[in-house]
Image (cartoon, rainbow, N blue to C red):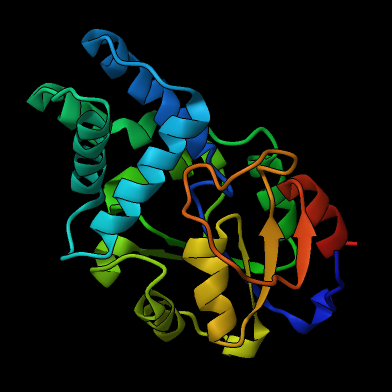
Length: 233
């Protein structure tokens, strides 16, 4: 698990989707009606792997709003499964973020952590979509950095540089907390940050909705509540 001196940090930055918001449940809930309509079917883990591939490829290309990234990922999944989603299905899937649920422990853990740290979020999302998710998290972040503001997506180093320019705390006093090794831990460790892995997929094979990646976080917890217990002790 490793160990961290939490007293050495003044601010926590979070990834949102996969860490605070249960995006895999949200993605599958939004995807299933489309697949049913087109008579297509695959196992959940296969669908999440398809999504991970297409989302990452689109995010690595020219900047598009996240709604368009999701619509493009749906088109890619359609190609994988030999169907063509309708325009309405693409638009609905693109806006489905507003319905993705928070993990059960997220809101309470964030409220506890805010009593000790300043909190920020560095998220691959649009401003309006994240605002809907933030209502479910029931906490006011000190800093909200979105892909829309940075005009690009993690794992770009530039998203973190953009965040550092906004956060009035020395970089070495910021602890980054995230689920995705690919989107977050790889770039954060390249920048010399201390990181905590919230391994929401503990016990399940594969990377789910995130592409495979190798990184070595400084500590690992299976949920946010356990992290909050340790960080606020």
